[in-house]
Length: 161
Image (cartoon, rainbow, N blue to C red; front, side):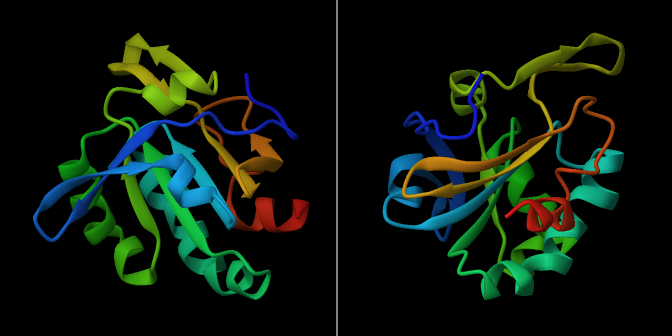
């Protein structure tokens, strides 16, 4: 599992563009930049929609003030779902980047994948928030339980950086 001080592995995510889904390399997003990446178990799920995403919408001005170039939300959902979720939550309008890790490539590469068969979630991401500076994880807040959202909220990460 990835930890503070580790370089992010390069992986491909997807984001909706003007012409449809577009590939985005993690290395392109993080090289020479200060980026927050937070991940959720699933778009349109309760805690993710009602707590996690809103916490980053609310705290975006504080992250901007700390020199963060971009806030990226990652979920193991397809790019169409991530786009619709970004629109429904106001995250896109607020300036958050909603990224799809549809094949769980990035999530598995950093050791954050898990299954929750009782609720129909397979190959999903654990809930975390990290600050990445020039491709290296400088702060990592990982929730012990994917249903909880305390240290991985916007304010939780802000307190740690």
